[in-house]
Image 1 (tube, rainbow, N blue to C red):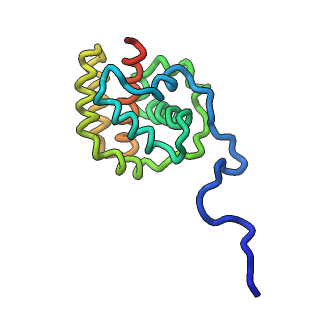
Image 2 (image 1 turned 180 degrees about the vertical axis):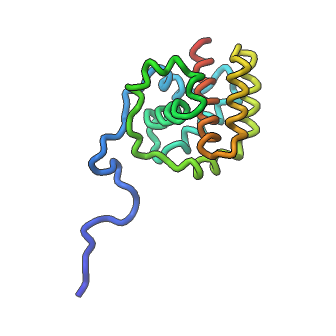
Length: 164
């Protein structure tokens, strides 16, 4: 006697059942992060690559929010004290969140470029302590910290772009 499945077995549902997933609205930093980097051109490839791999969905509001949340929820978060006043509104559920080990593996090929971008941030008056924190994060033994450091580099570039 044949049996018919009552559910599909391939892929993930668009929205996991019973969860309210983040879909916007975007804050000013996220809007700027969604646009190409102009002041530090070498950062543009990193921004695109990070946003492409940070979550399992091609939706910029989710990509940018997860980038901010990974930074704020790490030891690098205090560098972005401007965002802490909005922290409660930023803390949303990202249903398409990806494992840091997988993201780290996909992004590590660009680490030399992340370090170069950190070095180029010197000319934009980013403090030495912040630059050192990002470089330490990139060299960390923890995949979670390395991913957060990459997110913080892209976030710092975004703030530089906003201040110009």
